[in-house]
Amino acid sequence: MSSTAGTAPAIKVFPAPPGLPDPLPEPTVEELRLETVLGALSDPLRLTIVRKLLLESEQFDHSCGWFGFDRPKSSLTHHFKALREAGVTRQRQYGLERRSHVRVDDLNARFPGLLDLVAAWTPET
Image (cartoon, helix red, strand yellow):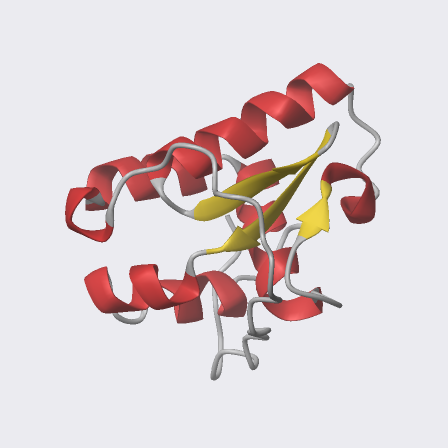
């Protein structure tokens, strides 16, 4: 993993639009465990997903296709599920599409500074 340097870039947070579907099952804030969150973030693709959501979001939540990864859908589904089950992201079902966003407030409340580290991380090229 690349080192971090300087200050973290600004994390984008969008207000929740009205009429959202209920989120898929996820741990509560009190159930978030550091080892589980770090385990989910230990995979470079999942770390990239979270970093992209934090820094490049264009709206409240995004579908898998927005990321532009050249990976099989089953692989991406696995990674998004791992992030949701760890409590890093929240997913909602919109018809056949699942859309994700980072649980910024919940993670900052439970693990202050963690998302700043993710945002400051520089992926290897």
